[in-house]
Length: 454
Image (cartoon, rainbow, N blue to C red; front, top):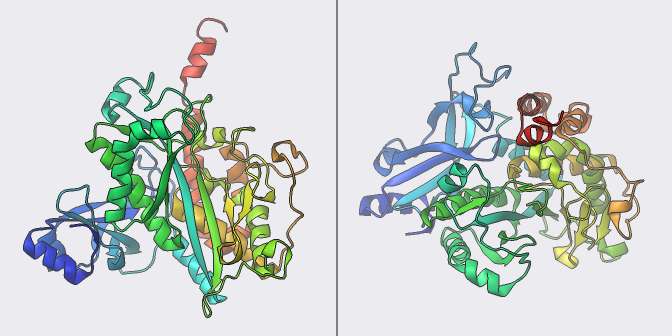
C-alpha cells in the first residue's frame, strides 16, 4: 500500500493489517522530521487526535542541546508539553517503510493555541496574509545533494574523510554516470511517486556524486510538506540500500555547493489567473510581480538567516560557482540571486539564495513576508541586471556570514511585522547560539595551520 490516504482508508488498511504503524511528525527549526511512531490501533482509538510532545523540540540545536534563554521553553518553565495536531490531509502510506503511514502535524499548546514560532505555522501565517489580499502562492524547490557508495556509519567512522563519492568525475548531465547511480535514483523517483510526492525528473549536477531530483510545482504548504518528506525519505532509502547522502550546503571548498532554489508564482484566488502575468507589460511582468520581486530583493539580507541557517551555509556564496553573491534580478541569468523564468501562466521568479540545508517552511515564509511588504508599499523594482552579476559591485551583497545575516534580521521591521516580534526573537536566539557554538570550536583547519608553524 502507498500514497495519500483518507482517515477511512487508513482505518481500513489498519484493520486489514496493511498498515500497523502511524508516524505523527512535526518539523523542527532545523527542518528535520521529529515525532512519534504509534501503533495503528492506538492512533485510531485516540480519534487520530493530538499527541503531547515535549516543548523542547522547538528550542534545541542540531545536537539536541537544551539551549537556555528561550521564552517558549526552559528549565524554569519545566520543559512541559505542547501538542502535535495531525493534519489528516497529509496522511500517506510510505512505500519504503514496512506497513507504515505518516501524518504531518501542526504544533499547538496543550490548550490548542497555535505556536507561531513553529515552522509550519510560520508559513501558514504568510499564506493567510496573502489570502487576505486575494492571492495564493504556488512554489517549488530544486534540492541538490551528494550521493556516496558507503553507509552513513562508514562515513562517520572515517570522520567524513576520503568519502566514496558515487562518481569520480564532474558529471553534470551525464547519462552514463547517472545510469550507474540509477538503482538508487530510480528508487527515489518511483517511491516518491507512490507516496504521492510527484517527481518531474532527475539529473546529475556539477560535481562528482552530486544529484538533483525535482518535485512538481504545487501550493506553497503542500510543496514544503513534500520537501520534508522527500528529504527524510532520501536518507531512509539510502540507509536501506547501503548508501549515504548529504544535503550539506558546502561539502568541500573544491566542490559545488548544494542549493535549494525556490520558485514562486502568485495567482488570484477568485479567478485562478496568474497575478504575476500581464501581457501588456515588459517581460509580461505585472505590477504585482514587480512589487513582490522588489520586496524579495530588498528584504533578502533580513531573510538570509532563514535561507542559510548554518555556519557552513555562507561558504556556498562564492563567485563563479552558480551560487549567488549579489542581490540583483535578471531574465534567465544564473549569476543573479533572483532569476525570472517562464511565460504566460508559468511566469515566475527563482530565488537562488537558499541552500539545501534550509528549512523550506522558514525559507518560503521569509520570502513571502518580504514580497508582501513590497506589495503593500508598492515598492518599485530596480532595472534588470545584464551580464555577469558576480562583478556587479554596485549591487548589494548577499550577507557573507551568519553574524551579518542575524544583524539584518534583528533590525528588520518588515520581518518583525510579517513574522512577529516573538518569532524573530526566537530565531535570533537560535542563530546566536549556533554562532557562539562555532566561535568556541577548534577546527582541523586551525590545527593544520598553527600546530607547528605559529
